[in-house]
Length: 173
Image (tube, rainbow, N blue to C red; front, side):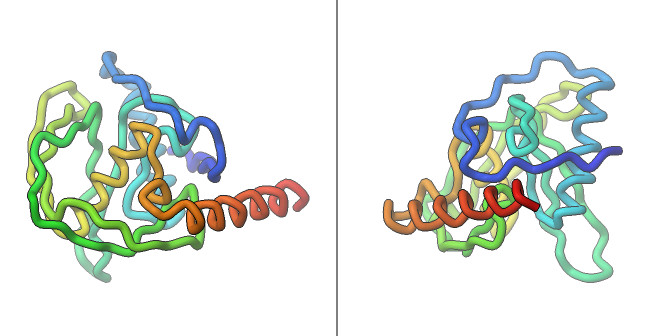
């Protein structure tokens, strides 16, 4: 398993929709393992392939954060929301591609998601709470959307400028 570099906003790849996956092979399993390793190392609770520069519809997530609780890594390929609740939740979201920046985002509090697993079999599950927020956030990445796209323009521009400065500082280091 390899820890892959995470793209930092603004990067044009983060704004492009990812391509559906049609081949379920060892290369896909290696990608999924690398993504999980990268996510846990960051540390984060979710990671979409475009965040590591891979323009494919695959995401990983694990919202178990309690000390001593068993991890629940999930790999979702070609995921899509098939149902969402009318009830809404507001969470303070962050993103591995927008480090150290957080903002409240409102989303459906429950969703049902359909996806394919690593063997290509179709799966479906309902998510609520943090899991619902996370899966919607990661599916947004697959559609070229960032959590800051839900914010007012001024706040979004401010965060983007901070990320441009961070990228310049990292390039100099």
